[in-house]
Length: 416
Image (cartoon, rainbow, N blue to C red; front, top):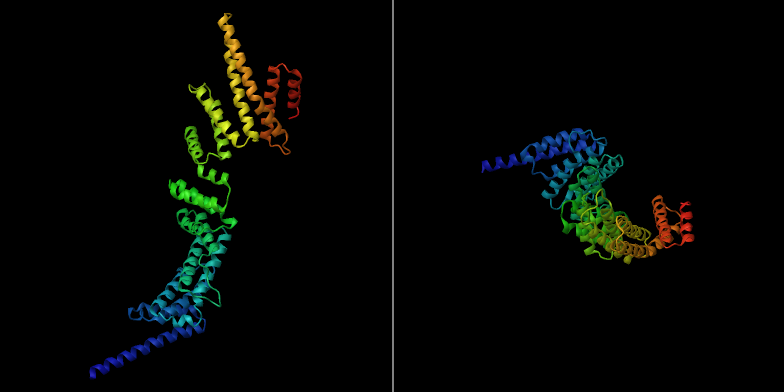
């Protein structure tokens, strides 16, 4: 019995000692001596026997939160805010009733959030994106913890999804060249189908990221979400097209693949026609498959013009395509120099084909001429195109022996 009494007295003595030491900590806090309070709480918690004292962790959180607030220039050698957060969490694990923190509505957690958020904004505005990301991430962790616990302060509580904070966190990470860390934050906004105008680029960024990673399924997911929320078919198709590189055959193959999926997209069809035109008519030596290329180009341009008959560029490129065929026929005619009946018949046949090609060219040339002439603020390239199509019309009327009209268009060329 004597032994039990001694043990009990020892326990009472120790408990009193713990309380006395925490009273010392409280005294330093009340006097605003936080450096001294930190020294005392650190020493107290360094003893393994004291680490089960819930109130000690509460005081550590309070002290470190204040030190974090005071450290506006980031001179501390340790992350006081992070230490405070961990201390508060540990206190709440040990005291499920959360008595100490409930008394002030968990204000310490909200203060830590404000510190990190405000400093994150400041760093972001100063273009110190790495620091901004670290602070925003801390703010995100705090906000999610507070929201999960269901805490409120003076009637304020955090939303289920704080799009502004998520976007700032993601943007800070992205601008700090931490793309892989930024993506999950951007995905939170996209997966929630947030539709504010300023968030459209998030869907595009995610699609581009996954296209670069060769993850077509995820790229398609964010293109589909983006096009659903921000209807703009040409924008999303262009984005999905990606960048196949400078290899012309790879680019043409990508156009053909995309056109199978979007057969009614004029911009895609027109770009494909122009790409084929350049592929067909840009060469040092005429390629072996030149005729096949010409045929493919004509079909592609016709398909694009079917989608948009009033396209100035479409009618212009088709004019140039047929004009090139006329040149080819004229070249073929020039090499027939013989005087035999067969040579004469061949020249006659080629002349007939040239006339037919001029007739094929005329409606496209006239349309392009009218469309470009109607422009009130013509770009420099449009002026070049108008001049070329006007020259084609002058040549047409020369071919048809209609001198007045040929002269009319030649005079027009002088005004461009």
